[in-house]
Image (tube, rainbow, N blue to C red; front, side, top):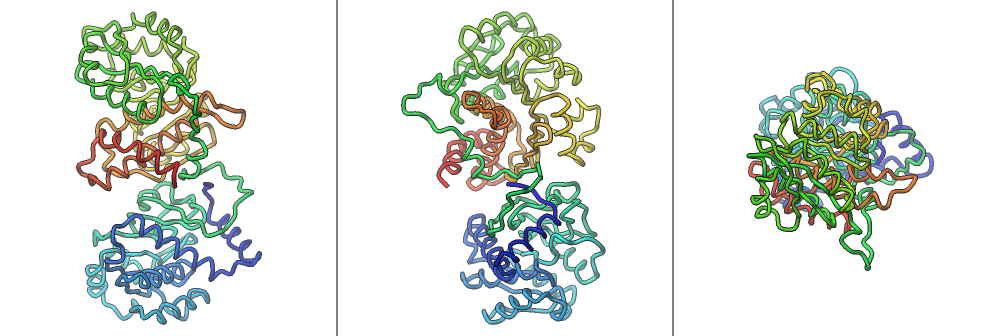
Length: 520
């Protein structure tokens, strides 16, 4: 799904209206869509107490539709008007009249003291922010400022209509203060400001609602991932398929004390559908791994004194790749940063003309970008901000401030697919940027990245057989892996909660994530 600027969205809105869709109808679709998202995201939404803060513009009109629809479902809803009624746009006024007709309690903010505002918020379970829209830029007035501060201090679940109030839809710049939301339901197309620093820190999870506006001619190369796009990429299995039809993944991972990382990478590749998985492991750890993994094969390899892979094993690895027709290599989970292991990784990248996923220690073992530039391998690299920062000679904080720019420049300069992990994971091949809206803080747990690298490897093995001139199989595999991994994490959160979520919970939910994408 294309990501647009506020100006582009305004043009699309106006075009839809000029072609016969009334603005009031677009509001109705937006509010209805937001309520549908809430029904899916929040258990027993109709039993919740909800307060909707409404501004004077179209965003406020959307919020009034939300209030009316929730009231119709049986929820307890109150509306607080942050603007004077006479300042409202005509469509927003119309929806205010409709809200009154639905017997919703509507309270002007000017009639409430700061303490009363806090009391209204305290009484609620969910807050809907419909104060400012995508056109916001400038200074926040005193009334709105006090309200936003009260919302942010309440620790209530906050849902933003289209964009959190105070975030600039073009630049990501934020007002003082800015609504800190848990969920942003964006209408038609996601706005650039939702993905730019510092605005992206305030949006929470992002969901997009189709309101019937077409965007067929957008020049934007920024995209937000959706289930429908992933469904188009995932291959359909032929009835006469066999295990070799779905790729052979060689995973070079593990060292003394780090066999868990290797196990999780293998499980990630298997659960996402790889036909064959072989784990290349230091020879003294082979017995352990034959117990820990059942469906994957093992390849015992020469080891260092620290029980990590030794550079001397390059011959055995190259022979195995040729003899067993390996399709893709995953390098890094729990590999260690031993010097000899580093030499092995660099030799593989220079000698093997295969897709290679570099993760964790596979990245840390590279002293600089020079090794990547000389690589024969086709690389997908999966750094977190600290790892990319070390490659670029920058601090993690610098990477975080301009995640998209650093990711696509690194990709373009090194001719590889870059997966910059973290909140709103960025997947890019040059200037084509894909941003993942899924995932949750519970996934910030040891081993989560190992599962992801295995999943991407398993998908490369399947998709590279289907590559066409229009589709890059490595980019497609990275996109699918990131989305399915985060969706699995979100499914696990529903069952386990965020605090108790661990990497193996993500593995367990991979089949459910694949099924949800393919069936919905």
